[in-house]
Length: 355
Ligand SMILES: *[C@@H]1O[C@H](CO)[C@@H](O)[C@H](O)[C@H]1NC(C)=O
Ligand SMILES: *[C@@H]1O[C@H](CO)[C@@H](O)[C@H](O)[C@H]1NC(C)=O
Ligand SMILES: *[C@@H]1O[C@H](CO)[C@@H](O)[C@H](O)[C@H]1NC(C)=O
Ligand SMILES: *[C@@H]1O[C@H](CO)[C@@H](O)[C@H](O)[C@H]1NC(C)=O
Ligand SMILES: *[C@@H]1O[C@H](CO)[C@@H](O)[C@H](O)[C@H]1NC(C)=O
Ligand SMILES: *[C@@H]1O[C@H](CO)[C@@H](O)[C@H](O)[C@H]1NC(C)=O
Ligand SMILES: *[C@@H]1O[C@H](CO)[C@@H](O)[C@H](O)[C@H]1NC(C)=O
Image (cartoon, rainbow, N blue to C red):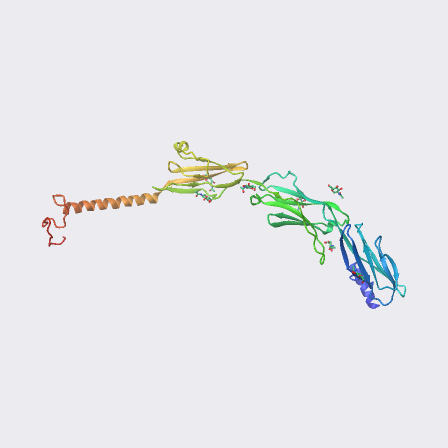
């Protein structure tokens, strides 16, 4: 009795009984059933003070009081209510009566799951915020509904609902999305699923059609920094102005010397190899509907190469001078070359060595 009061006190404090004091066992202990489907459940009591027991329900077979039994079963052919609360009661020999409600969750998978975006699914613009909506029609119970938003192969947002209506409702989930260039070309879709606590398995998901995202963004150079290139003899300079953007950027070049402007035919290309290689500042512009970007290429005379050239010329001059000197001393008056000017004899080996 002392324990009973303590327990009552606990119930009063927490507001919910941890365990029913009515000695009945239900099998299964709770029911998750699709609207229109059948189910059956057994209620039994281990009490040896049992006088009678039975089910109380608006419909089904097995309703009513039965004497002298220790189990009663309720069978429902087709669930016709969203809020079903069958009650299993027992009457004990001391006239004590108690009852327990069977937990029944009646569900309905959605008729449709579809996605919409206020701006009619047109292209998005990088950096702008968008609200995408997923409409779920005729689902019950909404508090067990979970909506997942997929982008590519990732779930980017999950929404659950705390409405309590047991009957079917129309509901929607809104995804806030800031358009990013990396989203261009990815698929977005939503899916709805009814989730129940174990051991009830989750029902299969219903997916919306997927939507291919198009994000418009202004040109961005693959190498954004301005570049400095050196002109070197024998190799052509290549100016690489490649940019990404949606729509595809168009290019235009501005040359340092007007004559180049007329000579270059491929000036609408991202890669430029000037047909007349001259130093100066080349400017490339990449533009699309979302913006225009400019990059400069400074082409300079290769100073290091000029020193190399000077060095080469220097070496060449030295060699020439040397040859001249050598020639002056060793070339014979006939024009043939000899190591030993005085003692040279045609067709005969000479004994004297070089000077
Ligand atoms: C209820 O009990 C009866 C008899 O014990 C058994 O045949 C039936 O399968 C049980 N039903 C459920 C739903 O457990
Ligand atoms: C849900 O939407 C459907 C179709 O749009 C409509 O026929 C139905 O009446 C709506 N149900 C509720 C509960 O609003
Ligand atoms: C989405 O944006 C709306 C309006 O800006 C805001 O009310 C809502 O809380 C946002 N939702 C989420 C999940 O951030
Ligand atoms: C953006 O996506 C569209 C559609 O998939 C694709 O055709 C286009 O090439 C993409 N553009 C960029 C710059 O990635
Ligand atoms: C439905 O969802 C609620 C809230 O998440 C949860 O407490 C309850 O157990 C769920 N119902 C079933 C049958 O699993
Ligand atoms: C490139 O050069 C231009 C003009 O010379 C200048 O306005 C711009 O800020 C430079 N950009 C970078 C990334 O240094
Ligand atoms: C130009 O630069 C891009 C990006 O860095 C690169 O993919 C491409 O191969 C380069 N083209 C040339 C001709 O160098």
